[in-house]
Length: 211
Length: 211
DNA sequence: AAATCTCCCTTGACAGTGTCAAGATACGAT
DNA sequence: ATCGTATCTTGACACTGTCAAGGGAGATTT
Image (tube, rainbow over all chains, first blue to last red; front, top):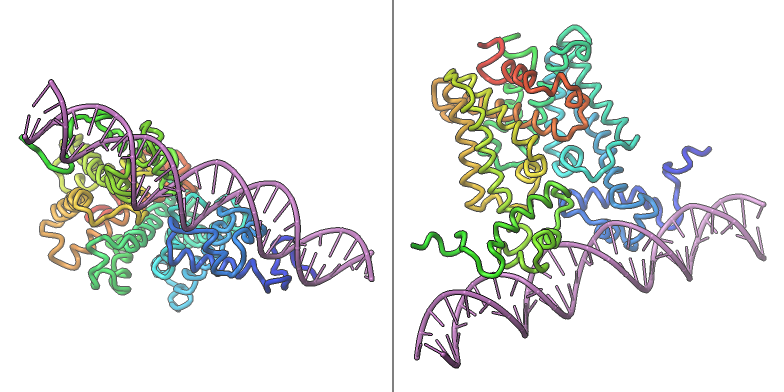
């Protein structure tokens, strides 16, 4: 039974599964060198193949980075879902806080991947592989904000503004923590998980004094 | 009267003022190619000098990018100050909103420079030139948040959290707008200046329902 | 005024990069 | 068993950043 013609995890020709091995190598390369130090030939070396081998599977550097970003968004959704699963709480606002913490979890766990997904233009974000997971992530956000508001948040300007506000807070916190040159993030108290939760509770739409 | 020994705008030897010309060329290169497409030799070509000329003034690529980032932070402060100047309002909270709008102004006006300053590790952020202006920017934020709270915001955990929250909202909005792949920022209504002000008024600490 | 000095910049080279073309190799199918 | 095709390698090209060495113009000294 054939799965896919082009993308599927074809069993093994020479290498085993070079496509997957290259993605793993690329993630190591990315984590170690960052987006700006990323090298296609470096990935090939890590995987133990010739310098032109990646081209056959991914076309060019952008293609490999696109595959990385796609996998990143997939795991991004998982990270947010994990925070949702660990609370039995069905309170909509607490669920919004939870995905915010998951968002930050992901950024901290995979800083270079996060940067690739949000601050680079090298991957092709129009790619279907990326778009499908990115939309999932966006849908989680919209869903949680909608639940808090008790209406489809995309229907009204106020709802859209709440989406924008929630996304901004969480994304901004993640990015500031990653840049690491904030005086704040280096202070243990401010960057602690519990304190981040406090900030989110006070700042996310539907929380704070509004609550 | 000598100004500085190393950095001063020494009048002209062969070129006129190559150092300044290179910075201008570098900014054009950055705006056109982005951080990831930035090329030192490209800057030299733009300035009409040989490929190794920049090295003498800036050492290496990181040196030139550091100079760019330093100038970026300088103008970053100016952009925030401009928004402060245009309101006669002395209300502390409105002043906080104003610097937030200035922050976003800068990001929109110089997206690549903004990215260089916040999402790259190539410039040397320990450099004194960068640090001095970056600290000015941070001081503006701390000052405005402190004014809203009526106390030194860095003195208490709640104050630090307000700083973190305010910074996160504004930085996140800027970054999301730049990435441009948010459904939101493409919608005229959400990205409009007046609507951004509305969001900030509702989200920044000391505003919204708290107010 | 002439020679020297010093700084600015150029030239040339090297290792490394991404990408393309062509060839070798091994698997699956006929 | 032969063929076909997907997989990978080899080689080449233009490009990059960085280093070493040299040339040339202003300033300084004798």
